[in-house]
Length: 405
Image (tube, rainbow, N blue to C red; front, side, top):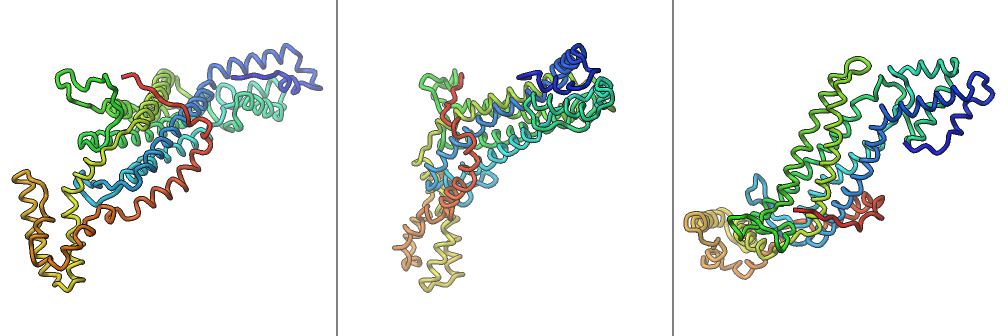
């Protein structure tokens, strides 16, 4: 705890003969011992959150740059990890950012909600301090306020037992566990995309993917984030159990557990954020691979557009639907049974029934016509949500992250 001066405490004794210097020294010694033994955790929690918040902000900032750069690049969307409608690479990154922004707000709220325990005594009644000040409640309250301010807090808990409520620990580790879930989802997506060879995390020139398979490029950073994030998510069970088993004003079976779970929680979150920032600073996108995957699936997705174009050209919807159905099944058989490329478009071009729209097929199959408002959503999201959220951390954005593999 940072102590600037004893003057404020001495002022409490002005005009009070009962508070000589020996009593004041005893009060100050009591406060120092009290704060170091029971209240340092609150100070450390506040400072630890202050360390994590800029690191999380930098992760969001790096993803924001990535999302803006690839806001218009079409890519396959996936539901159930099966090809669905198109989205863009940048829009998908915005989904990641949205989760991290929620985590940023969670951590800010937890830090803002933290209060100091103050000087409350062994069971929280302030009885010993009231006795020292000979029944002067105002001076007890003022001492509580001064110590709280010296510790760097604006407010103290009005009521408590021997310790601050362990719900505070639950609140802190719940926010960290939520962050762990977000990072795990992001890095799982990146691992799947690396498997598809669409996006890769940074890969060092001398990095070895496998001792037996030298061609491999394993997403080691993302795997590490997932492993540590699982641990971070699991830690929430400790403070929940501790809070649930706090008897009356306090039991001591919380102490050893908290020393492990709180420290590990913040250290794990720190490593996870450093690694995630490093990943986001070096993501590599392979547009041609992405386009190849789109070409495999887009003809099936475009069948509705083909039917509508034929109807506009005077065709019968039912007849058109049946012809498309037959051709689609034939093309699917080529892909699944023979391992050949999707040739549905070639089959449509070869069918004279579709002659009225043959000259429209290229425009009907333009991937950019299937991404909806994804680019506009990226721009709006960055301007209205990301940029304002990062403003408080603007001066800390230029720090780069390095990772030892």
